[in-house]
Length: 273
Image (cartoon, rainbow, N blue to C red; front, top):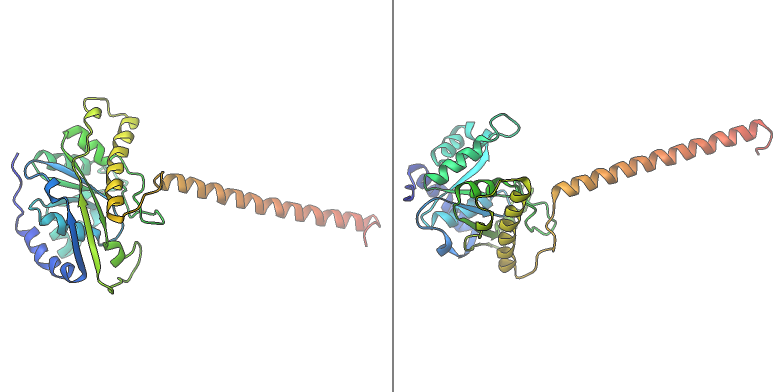
């Protein structure tokens, strides 16, 4: 299926966004040849800064294949921003509602129309202390297995040095470099034509995230942790620690109350000092 034309809104957004990106970030872009020239496909990208969607979109815009991002539905109702989101064909995600699955249906439709849908499989900014990709959610794998489209892993680094995760102010100096590396398609053929069980989707997602992490290792010139950071495991561990601390405080309070009671009893019996 032929590619979709870039369109007015994407070109207009590029006119606004590209100049400050060029000023703020040097570029080290590689792997553009891995972005398919025709047909629908998915990109799976690591997420480490609030501005990395702009840095990554700049990279892919220059390949001639613009990405359609999955974005929070609230952004589509905000005046000019909402008009730009709708005009550029971004896909709204309705969280915690009966429309939550509509984003995946829209992603499948977009791929089948020959477009690129960009996924951040982590679902949010990485919480890994050193900025490595976390465990992924299964949305990208689900769309990929249903459509059998190419999945292009993409790693990026540099936007997070300009605006670190959860920071409020950018670090403008010295000038940072946006490093983006797109790899060859992830081979998911072994998962095709099978029942999409949670286990299968988890395994396919791990294959996608392993490819993204490998590319980031190449960019950074260092090895990622053997096990990716898992926010669910961390939340469970935090609850366990909180519960243990609470029980420890309660136990100490019980022991203190017991000791005070014993002193009072001993005093009353004439055995105390």
